Image (tube, rainbow, N blue to C red; front, side, top):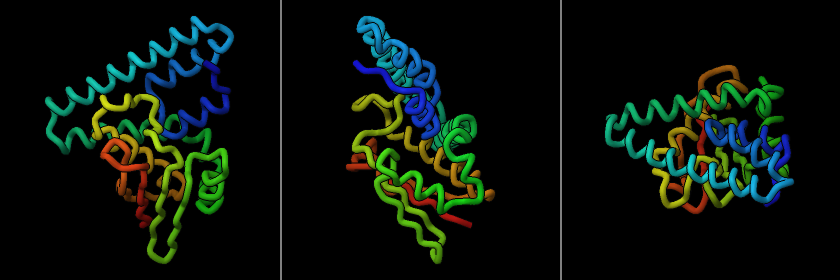
Amino acid sequence: MEGITRQEFAKYCALGLCSAACVLVPEIAVARDSDSAAEWSMQQLDAVRIRYAKFLEILGRELDEPTQKKVLEDLGRECATEFGSQTFGKYKDNIDGFLQSIQQPSGWVETVEYDKAAGTIRIIDRSRKCSCPLVKEGATSAQQCHCSLGWQKETYSQILGTPVGAEVEESILRGGKRCVFRIKLP
């Protein structure tokens, strides 16, 4: 297994891919020189993914749906607040620059559709897998999309300096082929 660079780590965390995974990913990067350490780190990350999937199950059983959505959206917002300034902080009041940057070949976005007149930004992710490192395919509930939605709202709110709305149009965890978000500008 090859490790990731510090730049990749920062990018993943800035994309809303935080929490326990951001604690383990640096260990994986350090472990690139040792296959056994890398294997151990991957096992730990898989354990985190399973535990997170179980946590979402518990939320589903213990909390009503509006509370579940709020908790997960708040988690996404916190992640964007904590790690986002590393990626989008320099784009404050420069939405065009940000949208251009995330569409670069090294970016996570395949396509951006920005309709200024309608006040919408449609974000189509490049990856055909859920981007969150906490997600274990086949185990993680689609509730996780509320976390990603919170990340989208907070990111664009911080860049634009005003609250925005957002919705999930398509999601891998909801059976889609990709993740697509629509940002609603004020």
